Structure formats: structure tokens, C-alpha cells
Image (spheres, helix red, strand yellow):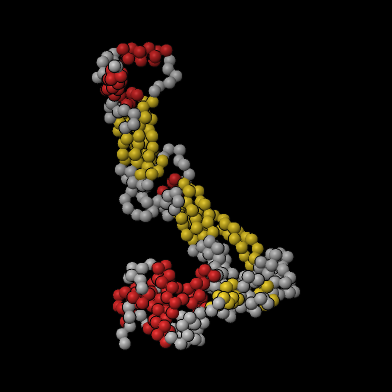
Length: 376
């Protein structure tokens, strides 16, 4: 007999998310499990089909093969699920589907649970130059290591951990509720399967002592505030043979005295004298990779922005290089001598009409109109 479509069996669409698939399976498993339908062969057969569909669609690789080739793309024997006819208790569903809720995931039969080590985060401050061009930085992070006094057992010298009397060394216990049972981590030994009666004085029975570790972090060119570098396996060590966590290095770029970064572009303010602004000239402008000459045309006003192509930043995510945008600010001279003041007054007397100050003239015209409109 031809198999039914897995999506149809779980009553979900073909673009259903992993969470939607799991939710559909939970609902159908509760409804169809043989423990809730004793003697109902149709429900038992439907339950087998639903579980097979879930085991395929909840596996990313198997689901991709099924979507492309149908039932021929997956191995039916891998999802057939032997022994549904009463031999498998309802707790099997909770181990695979509900374990993340009740804490049973990872605490398997016949041994202590292995715990993955915790992830660590390190805030790394960089200069703008280091962020733009990349750098290799050494950092030191706190970590833990096996206690040298007890060799990681947590027990005082001359003693050793004993089997947990609450779980019998399994690291988990079962709790029955109604027609099903739930497996959860043993609260007494916390999944270790053993407890320490006489703890080691050096580590307090933890089996680990605090330490520090030096890492060499390669910062790629173009990173920016908020970017993170992941060092796989450089976090806290795992427990009971579990894998270590990861170290995440979070980038923070210090403020620069000259440049401000916005995406791939850099911005800076360039002060110029009123003489250069009026007559034009050349200025030496700094960039992150050297100095360039900036040509200032005559009659340049404050706020004028000059764009220097490809003098910005190349993002770590690729793409072109940004630009450097220089905003000029005309400086008013200070600490003038008596003669300089006389020259400026003489110069000012030659500026008649609005032809030499177009912005001032238009502004005064606007003010005049404003007051005229206020008259009743």
C-alpha cells in the first residue's frame, strides 16, 4: 500500500516551521498513542505513521531529501520505530519531543548526563585603525580547569564519590502522572549519577578550580561596533565528557579624535581660514592610509562637503570601499592685533550691497518679509 504524504499525516503545510511540526506531532501523539487507545489497531497504525513522519520532517537532512525525492529519498527502516505495540511506553515520546520542557533531554539511560560547557563573552575595545585594517590581539579570559588536588573527582584525598541513592547512578529519575511517566534529571546529583560525601577542600567538591586562559584573536579587517567573533570550543569546559562552550568576542570601537564612521564611510571636519575660503587653495587632509591634498575652490562656504572616493572602509561583509567625506568649517580669526582689526574694518567698508554675501542678503530679505507679514 502506498504511503501517505508526511505533511498530510502531520496536518501541516509543506513550508511549516520546525516548531509547527513539533507542535503538530505532540498533539497527534497524545491523541493516538496506544496507551490511550488500548485495542484500537487503527489508532496504533496511525500512531506509527505519524511518528515516522515526524522523525523524517524534524531532521533537516531527511526533510530535504523527502521534499526532493519523496519517500524514495529517505530510508523507511530508519523511521519505522520498532516495538510500538505496547513495548514502548508513553515516556518515549517525552524523551524525544517533550524533553526540552521537563529537562530530560540529554539524561539518557544507563549513565550520567554530559553537559556542554557555558559560552563566554569578552568585550574587546579596538581603535578605529585596528577595526578598519584588522589586527591580532591577545586577550585573557577566566575559565576553570580540573582540580589538581582531587583530579576532578570533587572528593577529598583518600575518598571517592559514591553512587547517588536517589537515582541509583542513572543520573535521572522517572515521575509517573496518570497514564504516562516523565523522565527528568535527578535533583540530588544533578545528573551526575554520583554524589560527594567528603568534598575536596581545594575545590569545594566541584572538581574544578578557577583559572585563566590566553587567546589570540584574529580580528578581520572591516569589523564595526556590535560585530562578534566566535572562537569555537574556547568557552567553559563541559562536564562528564560534554563538549566545551564557545567564546564570543564582542567588538567595541573607541571614538577617534578625527574620524567618525558611519557604515563604510568616514567623516571628518576640516577647518579652513576665511582667506582660503574666499580665494581658494589646497589643504593637506589626513586619511587612515596617508595624507592627500584637497583642492578648495574660491568662495567656499561653511558646511561644504568634499567626497574623497575609496578613502573609507571596506566592510568585513564584502562589497566596495566606502568614501571619506570632509566637511569644511570656516574659522573666524581670533587674537587679532590692532593693525589686523584696522585692515578688516577697511576691507569690510569695501563690501557694499549683497553681491559679496548672497546668503546674508537672502536671509535679511526673508526677515524683512516676515515682519511685513506680521503687520495688520
